[in-house]
Image (cartoon, rainbow, N blue to C red):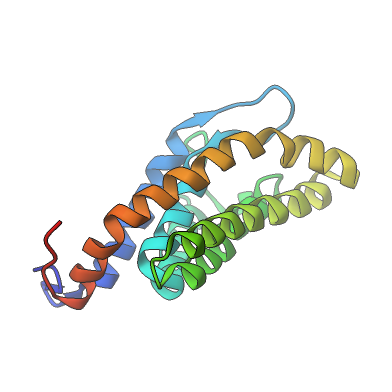
Length: 187
């Protein structure tokens, strides 16, 4: 089992996996003509990490991802990295990954579909909310413009991501729990 691999608890190993998925998600980036924020899959993996790993390890996976990027590794959208991203238009979204993973994890631990959907919705909503706040302050634009550029274009995709994350969590949740607990589950 994965409970301990080379002395590393499974929860820590899985947290590192979700950090890597966040890194990969940033490379799946689609620039939008309406503003400086691209469409990425990083938010999907941050929220999914929270849903599957819980609030602590899911949050740690997002913190690890941000730390890697802050050190200058090219893991943010467009293959960029560095501290400057925490003082630019995407800063709120980056910080939002931490809150999004934590909120998603808080609500999904009982693995009931309504709780998973609620956790995913709150996770994505918190990322968009913090993203709009960061966009407003770091781009010196109005609240209305921050909403139009930083929230509205992402709502349809995030609704789809909520459903996908919930379906994946319902299917993989028991398996991930068994890895963390060291018990084997047959599906």
